[in-house]
Image 1 (cartoon, rainbow, N blue to C red):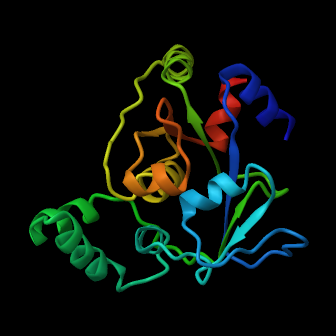
Image 2: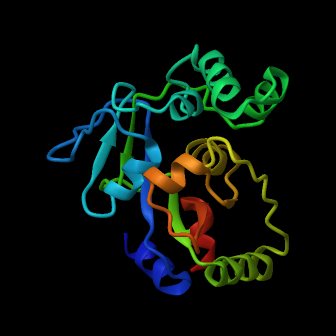
Length: 200
């Protein structure tokens, strides 16, 4: 975990370690909340370890992104049609552009003791710029951001960073800014653990 501390000192921010489990681990004394959103759990994990299971998550978007509800897409379409007055075709296209886990996932650990798969933080624009600059200098390529206002933290940060093994950047969405308590001057950033190590 010392590498993560070095990374945080170098680029700023408070980083939440995210681990995707394919087999149920020994959760010890970690909190297992119920009726919680993934973005909300990220905020909670800043003060204690959190384990999430399929039954923990209340958000349809997170259930869809983590592959925990095969019927979530239809309900998300209906909800967006009613709340946002968006045409079904537009909503369906937006949903299908969100990365989704297809492998079997039994739990997600936030700030647990195993090495994480990804790190997530809310960074100020200047901190994001420093990270991008270092990425370009070290790897010789740009960071390509695929920005969406739908499932912005669960799908477009957590799942995208995990599947692509690339840095992901998001401005958040209405729900994640509200429930995840994302400050108005922050962006959401996901960094795969294996990529983080190249920056140290």
